[in-house]
Length: 89
Image (cartoon, rainbow, N blue to C red; front, top):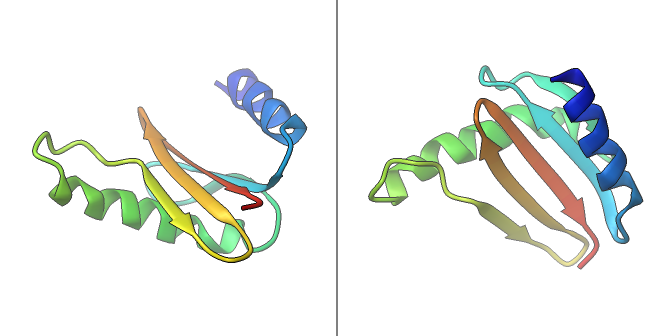
């Protein structure tokens, strides 16, 4: 899995507009982060996805987009890994 994560982070770093990313495990602990305040928000991202399960009929976590004046944050869960990506608006 480490190779797969490393490849994903390399691809993210090469995309235009990406200013940060954070990978979180199923306990809410930061596995890897890059960018401003990404690691300090790791538990928050995981908590948001856990709460989003109550908003869907299937009980699956929703994909979340947070839009601000300075960045758009995309949060998604795949298997047991939560990934957030911050991009310029």
